Image (cartoon, rainbow, N blue to C red; front, side, top):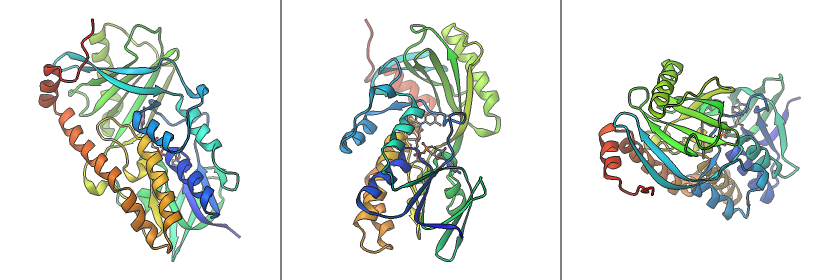
Length: 350
Ligand SMILES: Cc1cc2nc3c(=O)[nH]c(=O)nc-3n(C[C@H](O)[C@H](O)[C@H](O)COP(=O)(O)OP(=O)(O)OC[C@H]3O[C@@H](n4cnc5c(N)ncnc54)[C@H](O)[C@@H]3O)c2cc1C
């Protein structure tokens, strides 16, 4: 017979881990947490922990162990507009981390009673009030509640909910590089190849060059943009040591933020909870995971969980909706030119 759980969570990124840990501490549901990430198949990420994510960890009484950090720590972003060729520096405060180790650390905080299954979910179907989940290994499990914490290409969202209107393909390449040749962190705008932004981030002995591109011809646009950046900075990246790619959500409308329906819920990037202006998503993943756990803990009847989750996540959704307006401003070549030309809020270097 299939194993039956109260709750099955698909995805053990920050949202899934946070939800599982925080719920199990206070309510003894039977929970399965399924995740397909492996050492060979790591999730692409810049690994920058923004102030909002740091604040969320503080609220949970968590501090970051030193072994998660990579070199250097970041307190400025160099912003480059390749069209107008204007460059500005802005103050930012990020912790530079090894993202894979961060996910593993969050996983290690989950109480023992949660059944962590290292497998991929390949199929979900609803049979009356029960969700049946098929895993790549061939195993079948079922549950009363299903939680989609499976990121930007969420199977739970694609199966049970309307898809996000807009997604990019994000490509990142890792190059061996000596420090000092680049800023620690830069943000690059190039309207000829993308209507979004790209970035370089130093991580120990590597520089990551990554960006978000329209899926149809993403690799061609990425290569074209890389050439334009190389020409601008007068440096060739060379042969990448590693290339990675994945879907990246870019919510555009209020209804792109989805909390759930019936007994199926979405958290983190699967719910559209990511900043569409900077692609900072770890903080929203942690916050939404915590909010859904609170909704389960505080609701007396199962039908109230969704109502409470919507209420608790309202502020987060407003904040992320305002980011969609910020994205429109920053990604408009004309408005960006005005802002960067004015030098407003930028740091002048000696
Ligand atoms: C290239 C790139 C760079 C980024 N850089 C940053 C950054 O520097 N800082 C920041 O704050 N945010 C960044 N983000 C965004 C951030 O990574 C995400 O928004 C955040 O990780 C979302 O957390 P999550 O828990 O919702 O999902 P995820 O972290 O995506 O976790 C989803 C998990 O679900 C698993 N999964 C997916 N599908 C299945 C399945 N079918 N079966 C089983 N398991 C499955 C995956 O293996 C993964 O472990 C970046 C995103 C990209 C693509």
